[in-house]
Image (cartoon, rainbow, N blue to C red):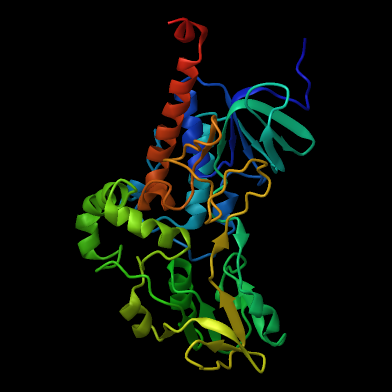
Length: 372
């Protein structure tokens, strides 16, 4: 009897076709596990195409490939966001991964008619014993409540909508947030206008990821990011909460680089508004034409109808395994297991761990295994 076209059964449903979701698909296919990958965008890689034009990855191409397919080109070049998008699209095609684009997932709930879960979206349902949530960290752009009190004549834009300097009004700009995107964008803007940067430093590498020193130490940096700065170590466990809040150290443009470029950096946070103008914690009121919010994103799992969230808004998990909901997993979250989890560098290892857990759980639930 043919399957209802609005209800399609699979062993595993992967939600999201970014680097984590595609890496999971590769490992699932290698293990001959039936699955489907649902992607909200119309095209694989669009999450990278929608970032600012000057974006480049923080790791060289040698460390940006997913399992089974090296990143093309110079292994020590730093790919752009557009190049990463094209690579992901090629990856999905190369391995013939079962991606369904243009499917925005609306609900994830326990299956009332059988074991496992039901994923819903676009008028269709996908029941599955296992679900991998790989929607990534860029979910709900955040800006503080007081932003609404800024004079409407001052342009406001979030980094999620920023593409290039020509978008901004003429005149000085305040970049709020001194982590990765804030530092990158402030450095870019300083070439064409007076640029203020507000936000506390979260530390920095002793050298830029693109320096000569980094070129010879990248194997060590990769090892530190995956093994030393992990939830298996005291230093990793201490670092994880800060990174999950969007407080990663400077990797490409460090503090002195920003100052040398002309960025006027105050570690006083932007905390309010005075006479319609943004005001810093030290009382300074900035007369600017634009405020660019590099204040990060907040997780949004309101579509998951299970009590799985921790206090930080992310699902409570152990290396991607959501223990309170057997069969449910997450990939692509900041510091899922290590600092590398927020980089393409860590996507393959995290996905391999989760898929092995699925494979083992499926094996233990077969009739032969239960009889034994």
